[in-house]
Image (cartoon, rainbow, N blue to C red; front, side, top):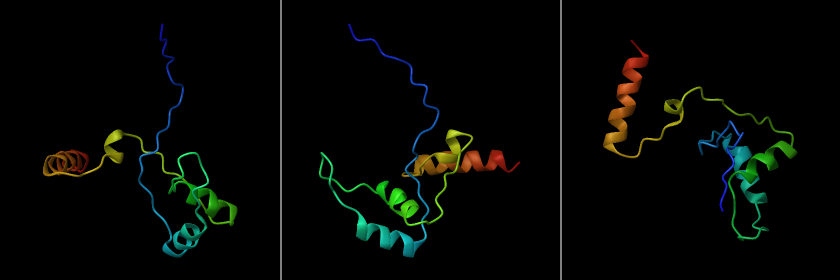
Length: 88
């Protein structure tokens, strides 16, 4: 019998990043694929930057709308609707 436990985790990685270009280039040069999947992970650059003494932080979005992506005209329309409501 499969029993699912409810996650206590309250954070997600939205996949949205903002980097200093120079720091990112330097970190990308240090990336490796020494893992079971032999893949490169952009998220590893955060640890590399932190280890090199660069300032690293996170943004806590208060709503899912703040983190939504726009990849189609339908999603753009929804984002515009949300922004119009927010700016009223």
